[in-house]
Amino acid sequence: MNEKYTEVLSQYELEILDVKRGRGAWLCETNQGLKLLREYKGTLRRLEFEDQVFLQMKENGRLNVDRYVRNKEGELLSSADDGTRWIVKDWYADRECNLKDSKEVLSAIEKIAFLHKMLRQIEFKEEWNLGSILVQLPSEEMERHNRELVRARTFIRNKRKKSEFELCVMGNYDIFFEQAAEACKGMRLFCQQCGEVEGYLCHGDLNQHHVLMCARDVAIVEFNRMHRGIQMEDLYHFMRKAMEKHDWNLRLGMSMLETYAKVLPLSEGDRTCLYYLFLYPEKYWKQINFYYNANKAWIPARNIEKLKDLEVQQPMRNLFLSRIK
Image (cartoon, rainbow, N blue to C red; front, side, top):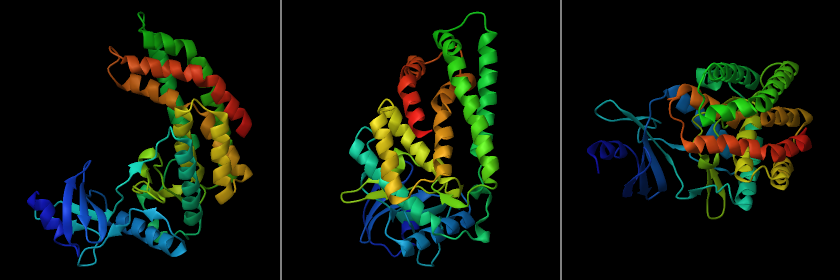
């Protein structure tokens, strides 16, 4: 094992049984369970914020999260001789949620609702007003994405010889941009009516990679994008990934919403927000944005397939939208 990692781990009250290389980190089997060791480049204030939230969550109920472990000096950060800074946190030897498995998806949704319910019980402290806590309103993000769509379409339109991908864009652009414009307008109005951004803490990066299926429970990890904002964005991001895997299956979509609402009821405002989030063709924007910012002389065949798949899925996506409106 590299001396640097040994040096860092020696600063903790842990008996190290085994260490394995993970993705950008070290997985450590210890006498206190599995831990993850990773280099940290953020601020101490950000770490303290996350740790305080985890502490309050622990007081309010039981939820498996990747809490930080303090070293022998009671500090969240440990330094190596070369000046690099490291954190150790609880970890889980479990796989990520399989979005193709409906049962696992619904178990994850239930736990996400439970997480949101716990976060709503936490009173936001003034000292937590860090730059990383403040995020862009969804309407502002949609406006920026729409400008990018327009720029890409103008570029493609002015090209004399168009590739298969570019011809595909010209063929379905109007359909998707109409939804993008409507979603942006509706979300802007929604945000104006709500006034300030909803004062709830959100995970900020909820996807299948950060929801781990444990033997008897579910763990939610990687809160490094936790912020104060609209919790429905968390729900939307996870749901959209699952819905795309299931070709926008209406039954699964409604089951996810019902599962969430059993733990944390959805208000009329929540449903309105979700509708406009789902209405925005985010995956279409991602494909166009990737094209515009990449080497336009060569577009992978898989990207062309993805663009065509979005068009094929439109009828089922529209049916789901009509049910949640």
